[in-house]
Length: 276
Image (cartoon, rainbow, N blue to C red; front, side, top):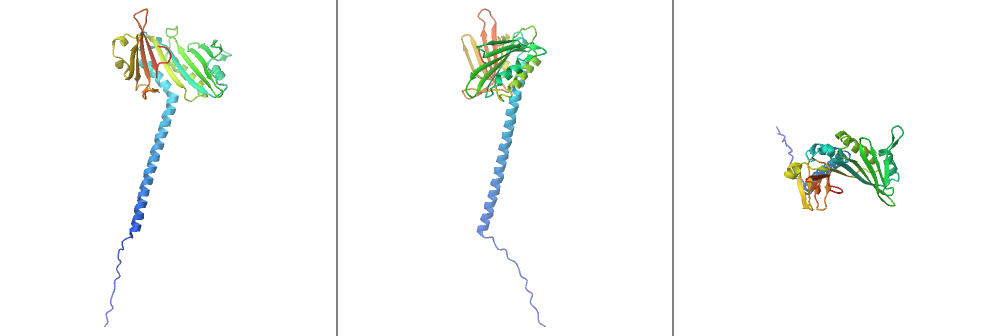
């Protein structure tokens, strides 16, 4: 009886060539780099979108926000209160529109057929038109500069303190919104400055200014009877870059009246424009 021999064929694992291993490793590194690059792109895109949203938000809302904050922050800054301070808001912008000035006059100082025209005063060789809107303060439209390709304008809204009809927060916000809306077709980002003036509360003569403002002091000086301090306040959204390389958004100046023992306080956001 013959016995058939049984053979079991076994498989042997053959190591992959070194070249294949190197190719796989290289492909793995490429995949990792691709994933990291994609993550970086997504992060940059998200940051850019957030920055754009913040920028848009600041253009549309920062003035409204800052005015509300100033209304809350400054009642104790002035002897007669914030309502009786002299308020002004200034917008400066450049536009290529040839009809901007006429459209701004129509929007802000209209000749209403029902309520009658807003009384206007033309000065500065026709470059300044001023009108008073009952209960809403004064609006002045200034033609600052004209070139071959563009025109630069400044609009100033002001409300003098101690009027028969006191300023309210609602009037303040309404006037600012009305002017901002009129400017929007001609400039999406005008330069805006707010200024308040009035007799200073006694705290400003006796107490530490940093405690009163709750802001970071950036620069201060005293000269010719004027004390001025430049601040950065976390309570405000607007700011301006100073030539020294830092951001500021509030300036306070105190000046003694020559004919009395009282002091005049001027507050500007992001800085004081014009005279103290």
